[in-house]
Amino acid sequence: MSAFRAPWALCGGWAIDAWLGRQTRDHDDVDLSVFADDQRVLFDHLAGWHLEAHDLNDTHQPWDGRHLDLPNHITARLRDDGATTPGRLETPAKHSLDIQLGDRSGDDWILSRRPRISLPLRNGIQASPWGLPTVVPEVLLFFKATAYFGIEEQMTGGRFQDEPDFLALLPHLTEEQRHWLREAISVVHPDHPWLSQLSS
Image (cartoon, rainbow, N blue to C red):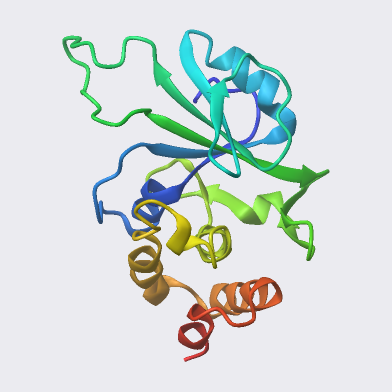
């Protein structure tokens, strides 16, 4: 992604590890955050990759660069995935990139439209200790707290990783980060179980 011509950031489980400075668990893929209005740039950048678009119900179909409305995410794998190439790490995952499409308005990252929660983009993506643009801890945990809350039990395999990720990052949050996360979650899900831990 070093040559990608638009904002992007590491997110998901590897981003948790980037802030902690160590790998905490196995990961099936690498999660990236890219903004929806840069999806054509993304399509051109990943020329030669096998791309699929996934909607909220996780129905998927090949992505040919057509505009995708939110919420949608894109999975990507090299077309030769599964082949053994000298010097190349083998990936057991079905896809090697899971690209989350984000929403923005001007210089603001819109995390939720209803209710409206946003923050300046410069505050939401910063360089992690690994030197990569990375979604900041409180925004990572906001998405983990709210994206699937109430529907985890309907998902195959659930979201088993979210609670350990929260507990791993929690001791490292500043008071300002804890306050922002507590307020943001409470606006969307005032009954969320993480709120009591963020208040203690």
